Image (cartoon, rainbow over all chains, first blue to last red; front, side, top):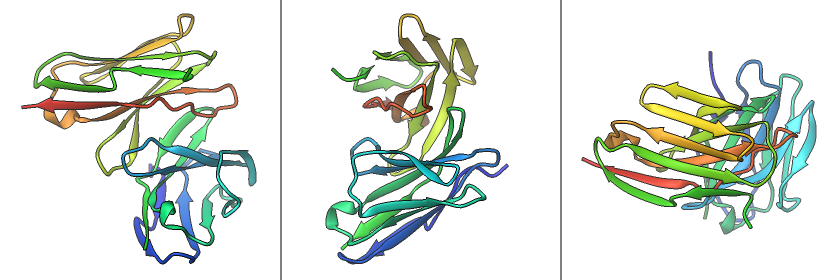
Length: 110
Length: 108
């Protein structure tokens, strides 16, 4: 049974560019959450998707947007990248509170 | 006051020692995750528990919902157990509340 799959695993982008990160949830999970983890820090909640709608949102600017597809997979989009957006982006799928995490996408903005 | 308090923040021990990490939280919850993250790596859920005790190999997790307290124990610790351990209670809306984590180093 495949867990949560994130792609790509690593990415380097230039300041001002846009990026799309992808997440395929664990089979049977209907909810996807995204987190940003800066080096040496704990994960910060970006948003959560359920039934293709953004259900919860953390304290992130509108440059961060997302989408959930009918098959429950999800995308995280970040526009106008800043150097401070460099981080590990974690996706977690869940069902009734039982979370499974992906290995993350390491984004470096130069 | 943080909603989730973990202790200790840092712990260094010798291989073979018995390890305990504690977690206290201030809101009512129905369940809680114990998570593990190795340096530079993704996060793995070790346990999700809502009552009593769970055991997986050398890891044991306990929770007392009424007292709002949970503990993670590692028996016969090994250097490969070195990681950050995070207590993450689950809100009623299924949202995780993140503890600050405990950085554990096991020396050979």
